[in-house]
Length: 206
Image (cartoon, rainbow, N blue to C red):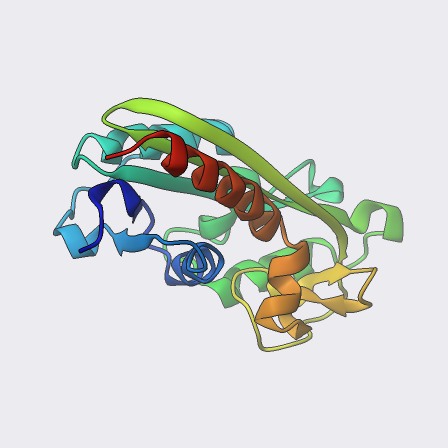
């Protein structure tokens, strides 16, 4: 029987993020559950001004809905030529009915005539692990690249098809899931969180 201490609740409704988190943490003896698995339908109103504030808020909020470890994430794209936008508004950058495609097209439109130095960008991911209203661990992962002039690749989600990663000479939308996990902001943050969880679970018996 799965020990309760090895259950982690993912405080996200984004299927792309949930997929990547499951794939990364799945190699550990963990049972990864979603809010839907627990029948939790309450939405957390994000009010933070940073990725860390939003991740912390979500993690603490949902950690009080169950007895399990609760992992929340907030992440997005920051473009130098846009003053750090879309930032925490990455998911809804194109408006109330935002989609990945609409968000991508808005960035491409705004960056159409931007010189190369202004196309520099980074993906940022903040993870916060909590339990019963107490933060246990927080980590941040970053990856730097540039905004491409057009979409390339059908993989990934969000802004992946326009985020050009120079070491691979490809956009994130062209990378395999394994390649992306190795270098992405979320992959880097999850690798650190995974190491922490391994030690934490050994030192905190059920």
